[in-house]
Length: 264
Image 1: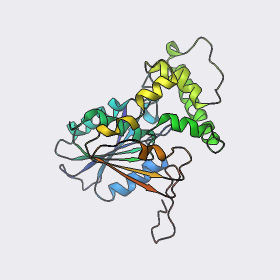
Image 2 (image 1 turned 30 degrees about the vertical axis):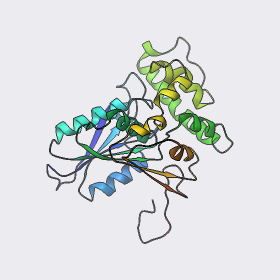
Image 3 (image 1 turned 90 degrees about the vertical axis):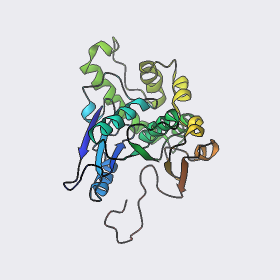
Image 4 (image 1 turned 135 degrees about the vertical axis):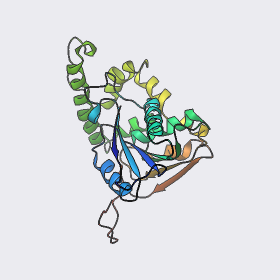
């Protein structure tokens, strides 16, 4: 796991820190990660942008891919930040898949503080992986399915080239569906028996009732990737606050002209 530290020159021990976790096929250098870092550092926060396994600076280091159940990786990052900045409270921001990991972490932690984490935010998190699969199977979702397949397959084949002992005897052709990658690569590498087993055990929706620590979930009704209905269907714990806006797409949230030079 790699962390990229962006610390303002005037930052002092005891001032807040932020851990940011990117989405599927993203990295520390994704546009939303960089924009949020700029916004936070200019306000005095020390920001740590996390690269999941096999992503960004994690390429060539991790032998196993990331997946929705690897909340322990986020916990490890939080504990590292706490050791580095022991007097500083930490906020966590997870985007999409990163939000899924954040919610899973909070559900598993219960009331136990992880590192110096005091509050979290999950933006467009997939809380029901079966609903996301169904969305990808729709006409409007297929372009996004194709996009993620292309990005993820490159990560997977690059990993196989770096670690040939992990590669199959014959490298298969790029699959057409994300579910096929989950079935043949992600699930087996994570110890799951199938894609359905992987989805069922790692989706945070059924676990949200166990979340007691404060987390704000931000979602958009017109998200083409992650349906918002499951957010309201699942029971959620007292720490969960949900804000669903009409428009915003998937990590888009482009504003009308309002005098702010950054429209996002």
